[in-house]
Length: 192
Image (cartoon, rainbow, N blue to C red):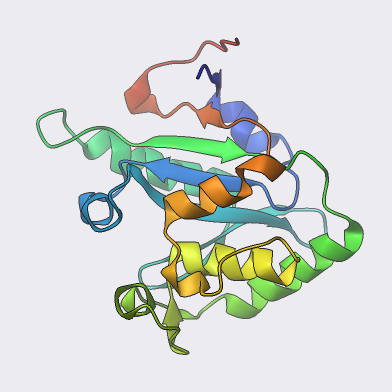
């Protein structure tokens, strides 16, 4: 599968639709081993009442809301510290919805995600395959958001992992686009 590569400046300045997914490959080795997948993290974008895009993610220590530019800088800094000897460099992808979310869906998404900010990050529910009230992991957060929007998901969002989320929503989303990270050194846009 060919993909598009986009320049970081476009990622940080171009408004993204509500529900756009961001996922990371080769983020944490422990997640790769625990899920048997190279997709190690998933986050979702929602727009606030002022029209500003925010990334919502469950990552240690808590669920948070972060700007696109700050997120990109964080991922870039982590990626730049890695060496080939250490392990592979991370890759970041975005997936935009094929159909724009309705204003009702966008509002419900934003309200739900805002209500989760500050919640403790925990993989306990994934490990025991049972929901826990005190925390959630990245795929669980995104799965709950999609369930609230009526997008079909498994019975237990706590059992989802980043790859399963990406696979389940793929039919509702456009082809993934890779966001160039400096360690990747690719800045040209390529297409099929």
